[in-house]
Length: 250
Ligand code: SF4
Image 1 (cartoon, rainbow, N blue to C red):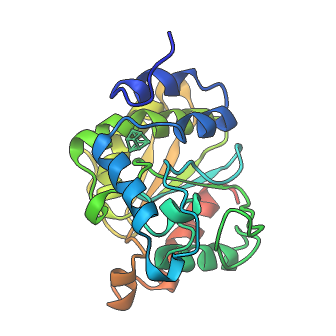
Image 2 (tube, rainbow, N blue to C red):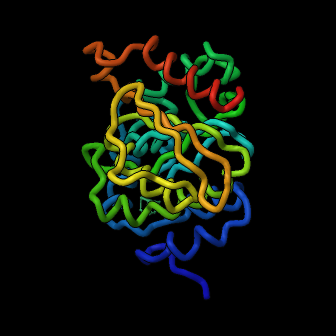
Image 3 (cartoon, rainbow, N blue to C red):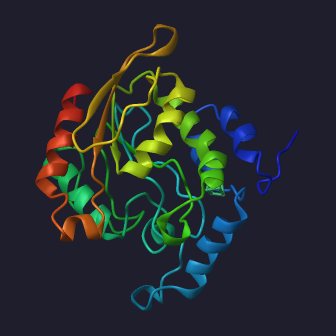
């Protein structure tokens, strides 16, 4: 039965049916299951920032970015209203992405240090960037219900990546809290009590049913505030990503 994209059950019913990441990416971009986030992402595209007044905003859910056989996942929380929600690509066109992609380039995991839009030619090597919430939320804070509604999209993405995925770096404590149940749904054993977030924290998750283990890292989010206050520096981000990439064999 066809599922209406504005039905709250749409992600849970549609995501498991995606046979590959291309199909999943196509399906997620049509999702309208969270009315508050649909309204917010579309309003951002209508009102726009003065600097982007002449640009057509994406204003849809943002799919994952990177090869379908990635060994390392980098997971944030949700797109920014005038970043990913504008450009249609994760961490693209906002200060966090400026730092992240420059660091990935420095590690040899990105083809160029800048990310400005989907047509900028950027390619990632062995890395897939994804988010547990695909639509820009007001105040960068999804509600628990929105986070849970969106969970099946990332769960299926990680499930499809599982044959090659060996490490994941989660950016920020909110992302960490959101990702742990996704990892459990996607095929890894998450310890109880759940491991606490911290910068540089590393947890090795066993694969369920004899599947491959996953090296999970916590890392402070390279938000404009965190970078400007020095809570996280490009060097700190680079070090965690370097360790994750090494665990992933990159
Ligand atoms: Fe769909 Fe996720 Fe966006 Fe909600 S946040 S509308 S579940 S893509």
